[in-house]
Image 1: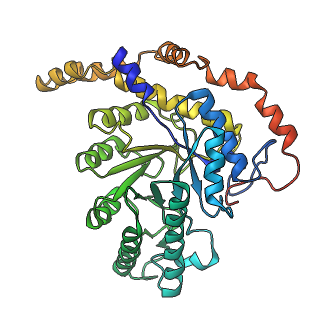
Image 2: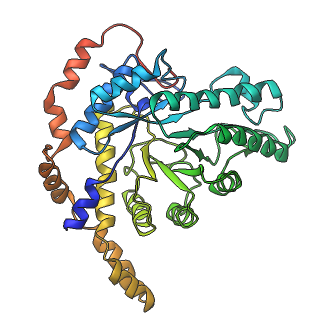
Image 3: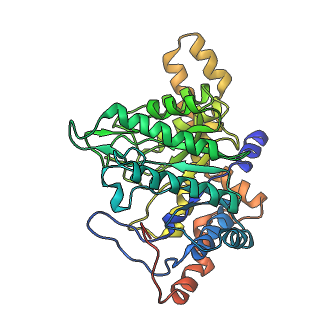
Length: 383
């Protein structure tokens, strides 16, 4: 149990700045009280999540949603709040020029504009001390014949190579994939294999990020995790839950057993290290923002604790003997263990409240920001 606690103390989960702003569906964005009005207030809210969980010390930024005049000052503010700037997320999907794509667009002018934005994000990494650039492209086509599929891969490779060459010492980029949306006939980076192939060609500073909501129904995500770890190309996760498509619901909400299976493969494959980024990528449309992030961090922590409880020696023995039910039982025994008392004890040992959700609710922070953050423009998805 001592080793398990030590492993849990080392866990780090990054929260996304955009989760603290207003978000919604294609039909409606639901505004809430106390929502941040700028990146500085987003970082203040993220610091609350870290203060009550103890394992969320970094915050991902999204550019231009989190654009400021002085990124060094923003990083200083983060440090004063008790957190740090994490991954820098690029945005080449919300400009009119990108209707037919960004880095894969048939027009060289648009491709140049998109690539320049990615290079700008590396500049922001330099200014904030971030070591990770996260790339997701909505690029694709809706109709057969709309554009040449192979040429789009060539354009993608050209842009990625330019960005790769710009990375400094200790910096990397993570290439994200997504099955579909907004492109419906062919997405330019639709799966882990496409992302993996580009990253292998580029070199060690390019790795794949697995967004748990970006797969076809029934996809065995833990197989992808195991494969990428085996090849040294798993750079991180965007954790969320899905029911139908890219729902961006709270991680562990739809299928906590899947989250457990993923975390077991991470631990078994040697990926439970600082070299694999564990990030949340969620939009809290109807639930309160900060509690939604606290609960999500706790869900990942609980799945990790259960994965650490797996008796790997017993599992290996059952596998060698071909004991199908015995092997499955080893996993299920760990999954069915109630780890909440263990985690409550661990938090108390770290000087934290045993129940982060209850502690935050009693803190009065929400009432404070609801009263103070009146006026101005609330942050939202895309702002």
